[in-house]
Structure formats: C-alpha cells, structure tokens
Amino acid sequence: MMSLSFTKINNMSRTISSEIVLLIKDNLLKGALKPGDKLPTEKELMAQLGVSRTPVREAIKILESIGVIQIKRGEGMFITNNQSHFSLNPLIFSLIMHSNNIEKLIEFRQHFEVLLINMIITKKDKDIRKIEEVYQSQVERMKPHLSPEELTNIDLEFHYAVLDETNNPYVVEIGKTIYEIIKPKMVHFRKTNSIERTLQSHKAYLELLNAGDDFHPTTAVQRMIRNNEEMIKE
Image (cartoon, rainbow, N blue to C red; front, side):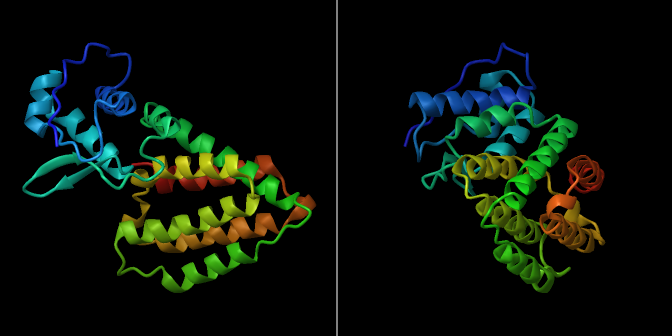
C-alpha cells in the first residue's frame, strides 16, 4: 500500500473542503490513488495542502460517508477496498461540489420527487404495493431507541422503493446519487418528533401516488419543501 503526497491548494473558487474532495476524486480517476492506498494523516494533509483542520475534517467526513475512504482505528485512512458504485461516480462528486448550498439541494430534491410521482401515476401498469409494504414496515420498525443512522436507513428504504417503481434506470441511478448526497445531512432524527413527521410525510407521499388526475405538482412541491427545510437543514 502506498502513501500519497499532495501539493498545496491554490484554486479557491469552491469551498476548501470541496477542493480536497475534488483532489481525491481526480487522483482516483487518474489511477494515482487505488483501493487499499493509505492517505496521509489529518496533520499531514493540513501541512501538504496548506489548509486548516476544519476543511480537512469536513472533506474526510464527506469521503467516508460516500464510501470512498475507510478509517481504521490505530492504522489511519485508506481508500476503501469495497467501493460501492457511488465511489467513482463522477455525478456524485460533481454534486458534492454544490452540497453546501442546502436550500438549492432541498429545492432540487423536491422537484425530483414530483418527477417521480408523475412518472409513477402515469404508468399504465402502476403498482405501488411494494411502496405501501415498505411504509407499513416503517410504521412497525421506526422506534425511538434506534440510532439516527438506523432510522435514516429505514427512511431511505421508502424512497428507494419509489425509485424502483419508476422502472427507469436513469432515474434510479440519479435518485440514488441524490439520496447518497442528502444522507449525511439527514440529522432530523435527533429530534423527538421526527419519526412521527417522517411517517406522516411518507403517508402523504402515498396519498399523492394514489391521487391520479387529482395530483397538483406545484402544491405538492411547496408542501414537501416546507417539511424538508426543517427536517434536513442542519
């Protein structure tokens, strides 16, 4: 396993943490970094890149959340050997560059949800039983004793089921990428009423899927944006 050295960051057109993520991405795509390679320590990265501790930690958090790096206690940071298909997905890295704009991210996500609803309700062979089954499972499984991470994973099962029902590979891949970006920001499960609000939101989503010709996208977007501004914003 190799330990790579980086040069100072000079381009500050983006946030420093975004520049660090982009640097790792470029080295992965060029083959300079490979699965199993050991990264410099946090202090070494600070010195090599000429940046403070905060953006380094932010970049590490992002890269770890999308499965690019793995932190082994007592050993250091490594490029993961078990990369999901998100890890080298250029789209997810491009979206990360803009992920600090939470308002725009929420806005895009909700318009994307409306696209999904429109695609499903206009299908000739619409069948939302799987989505309904996931929702009923969530009602039974989402309990206060679970960790925020566990609750987030259960939450996303609903949205993955919606993606699958579109039966469109382009939509599925883009949707999974969006949720992968949003996942680290889903901190709303730290609030005591978040489980109830999430289940209410999913129930309302199902009602929209059953609305058919009565579906009004503008109203739906406004309602979902208001709900998610409080639930996703940090």
